[in-house]
Structures are given as C-alpha cells and as structure tokens.
Amino acid sequence: MPDNTTSPWLAGLRLDQFPGPSTAEQVAQAAHWLGADVLSPSAESFASTSQDPAMPGYAPFTTKDMVDVAHDLGMVVKPWTVGLITLGRLF
Picture (cartoon, rainbow, N blue to C red):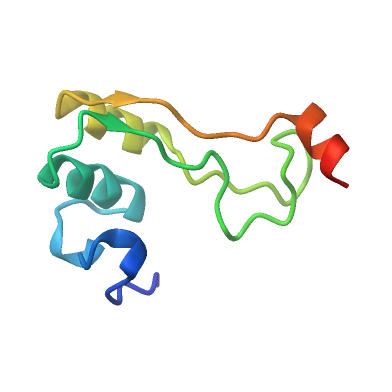
C-alpha cells in the first residue's frame, strides 16, 4: 500500500483524499483540483531499478489510467523523461 502521508512535494495534499483506485489516478485528480492545465509526471516510478523501459526492473509512474483521467479532466499530459543519451553523458 502506498504511503499517502502529507508531502511538501504535493503542496500539502494527501493523495488518498482524491478519487481513484490507483495513485496514478489520484495524482491526476489532485493536479486538477489545484487548477493545473498540464500534468507533467515522471515517466518512471521511484520503484524502478532501471531507467530504460526496455530493461527488466523498469516500473512506470505515468500510466494509461493516469493519462485517461487527466484527459477526461481537460488536462494535457507531458510525461517528463531523461533521454538515454543524456543519461549516458551523466554516468
């Protein structure tokens, strides 16, 4: 079960106070409640052990459900990613 404690990253909001069966959908609902026009979530989850979607251990944060809810609420979704070329330059 995800930790839904209040976080400064969430502007003091608790995701469990928003509708939706998943954290991803609750993120979209919270962004809408804040008045966001654009949702720009990270592509990968903090639980990922790989930054490459083609590799084992990759866990997405941005899901189809999140995108569908955001679109239903009138938001544009622009997932944030770090290009693999950029990663290669960092390490």
